[in-house]
Length: 195
Ligand code: SF4
Ligand code: FES
Image 1 (cartoon, protein in one colour):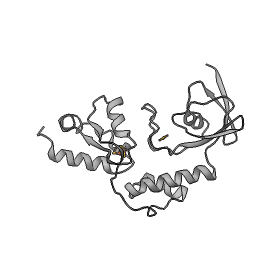
Image 2 (image 1 turned 135 degrees about the horizontal axis):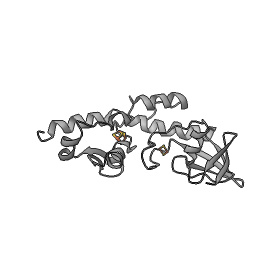
Image 3 (image 1 turned 180 degrees about the vertical axis):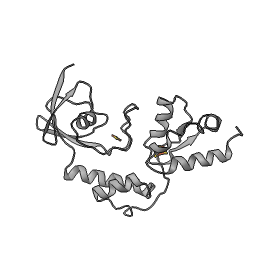
Image 4 (image 1 turned 180 degrees about the horizontal axis):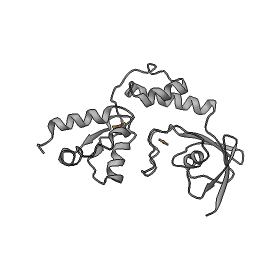
């Protein structure tokens, strides 16, 4: 296995070929905020909270750390005025949908995001996809999925699968950064065929 040397927040880090920037940072004890990442799931790159700045040959670019493989000699910054501003804006957008989410509120404090800056459009799901991907990739049940597209996209349980599988599982519940998943499940329960 060939090592790839790069710098993250001024620290020399040796990563393995194919590692993502997020994994390399974590291996060096450097924390990058994530909302859609889970180590058991394939990288998804949905939330963009893990955006970092890379510099190579004088060229700088913003990349999502959870889906970007490390490259030799990269100089990576995980915090800067630009990155913090980006995360603050993202958080304000997400908080308009899920203002009471504890993980979002914690991040909002860290990045100075104002949960009341944007008009509320409470849909409660921030489309991180953790529940959908966990059910498909780890449990291989596909009991929950996305329906519709764009701003109308939302998660939905499939009653015929959920009524058989979800009661004894519920492993996706603690993954949800908002309370929406549980609420949606309670709703589907009300309409599910009797078990
Ligand atoms: S319900 Fe929760 S876990 Fe599922 S996609 Fe929405 S925010 Fe993510
Ligand atoms: S954690 Fe990287 S895009 Fe969500």
